[in-house]
Amino acid sequence: TVSLYEKWHAKRSRLHVFFGPSGPQRCSDALLKECGERARILDTGFHTHVLESKAQARTAEAFYGKPMLFHLDGLGCLNERTSMVHSVWLTDGEIKLAGERGAVAVHNPASNLLIGSGIAPVKKFREAGVPVALGTDGANVSGSLSMFDSMKLAGLIHNRPDLPQEDWMQPEDVLRMVTHDGPKAFLEKDLGVIAPGQKADLILLN
Image (cartoon, rainbow, N blue to C red):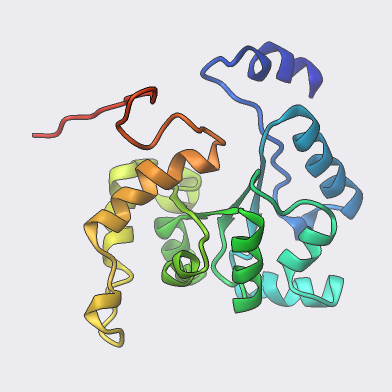
């Protein structure tokens, strides 16, 4: 870990090193706690797959006797360094806690649709102050690594007929995921807006 960090992350290259325990239900508490502590010491991120499926939510209650995010919080693993991939089955209490701790949710609509795990409650995240970045997950579970495909899906699947239209996902909401909130998942403070002193990565589309 230290050698990778010194070779890439510490030099502020384009490659960054994050701690990425696969999913809390597959890791020991000691491993999760160590990853969280090392992320703090090395000033890097803690990236993990959280509550992708309903079964994982039930597993958390069986393993820990409490919801998953409350367990992670008790281990010191829920803070502004934490990116929570999927986050489909968080309880309202967990969403509120994530907002208080500054964690970032990473929405993966294609992956979640392909394996039928559900749709992340993006509106609730936003209302609780949880930034929502956009991802693709792996090509084997989403069919594509195209962010444009992911943007299209994110802009469509939340527009449900049982919801009032003012709650539907707007194009500017999707754009915010990939510009303003996306960099937060990478702990980047100089990306996401076009302003003096910021990096300006622009793509022009015809």
